[in-house]
Length: 383
Image (cartoon, rainbow, N blue to C red; front, side, top):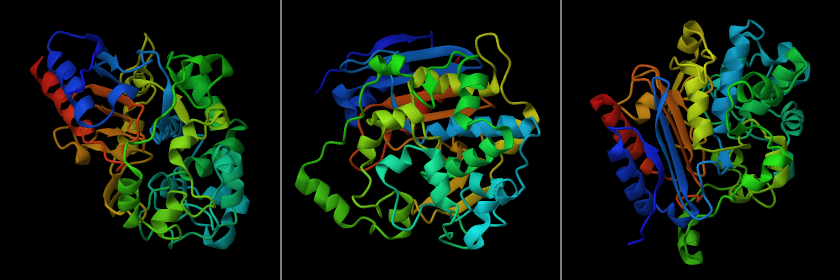
């Protein structure tokens, strides 16, 4: 068995979390590529762990769709400031978006994956997916893939490109810039929607899952066709099909920080983000007021996701984590990423959680999330 040398610290009562972190890392294949885990309880850091080749607590890597959590918090702040109205049509401030039957789609529809605007005919190139403005321009004329509001389907690359265009037209600033100025910098978060060149030396590449060519071919033989709803939603309808592993390993993606998938950070940054949102951090107040938090952590959409192909539960911009982890409260909110990152806050228990690994699962499944969350919840409940 591979020996994992876990580094870092845990508060008294959280020793079992360290043991679970080491065990899970071996069992679920994170291996030498490494992983990080950071937890706060009621604003106090209780876990800060890492392991792996060339990995420290400060190492940065791609967080993929965990980026959406940061973008959703910015959206919540703009709603809180009465700059944006959740029930206003996207096209009210972006008239071009009304083309092809999209005129009645609201911000709320987009945030809850009910818009039907999950991709474009012919697909996006990897270069296009680096730039939210380019994605938005192509989506403006695209017809939805189902009647808006009639079903749910995950907007993996489109959700915050659409909303970011609304933000830009409403404020004159990019969503990335607002995140930097109002969240990342004042709260000293190690989480970037646009990684500066000066921080590149801390970036370590995401690694592919470990399967032989024959095993990989068998896995994908029953997979979605490139022009299916799932294929379109995940960028498989481009030529060549999107290589998700390569996405965050591309400097252009990291530099521009597309707000649906291009964030770069570490577990400290993810856990700190959710701590700042609910409890405040580093002596600063919570980013979200109770009424805002209540609105954004209310379940809005549930059922079979036409893109993901399984039952999903969505809040406003967030995944409803209480349904995924039933030992947590119904208001638990957060977002995972396809390379294995996970982050959430449970306002009831006070737990805020950030996890990152550097190796994709070959099957896009990460059972360690449940085991780590359960270990953290058990330790927090006992202290």
